[in-house]
Image (tube, rainbow, N blue to C red; front, top):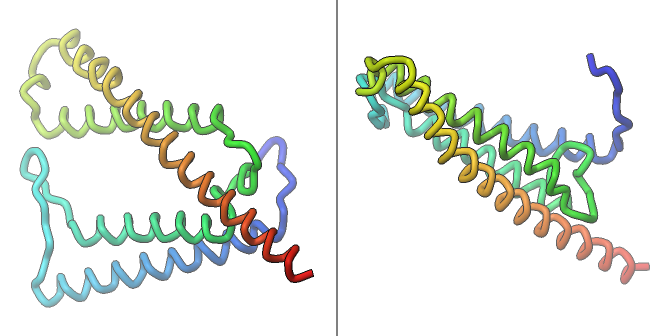
Length: 174
């Protein structure tokens, strides 16, 4: 339950729900295809650190559904599903915070994966292990933040362009 519920535009909510429904169907169909291929004996795997592997088809399907939802939102003139869906100015502070948090989360996730995979530094003393975490934070937080800002800025500009184009065509029709 949110402490302060925000007023939501029903039109934006309806459009976003329709877009997410399409993304859900793409994701579901892709996972179904992967299950069928695994039942037949076909598996697309990639190895990671240690003895684990990743299913490349599932990864591709997840990325495809995310990209599809982002492109469909942009085509509808929306860049996000939050309060900045149809903003006229790029909300850089909001996405800067999101980028920093995503970078920190990514660094911690990579550190944990490496630690439990038996990286060479995992058997060292605590200061060295923390040094690895700090060095990953120093590298990943700026990189991920810049990527988040770049992707959201491109998405914002595309959505704003599409929104202005549809507004002009509506004015010409009148």
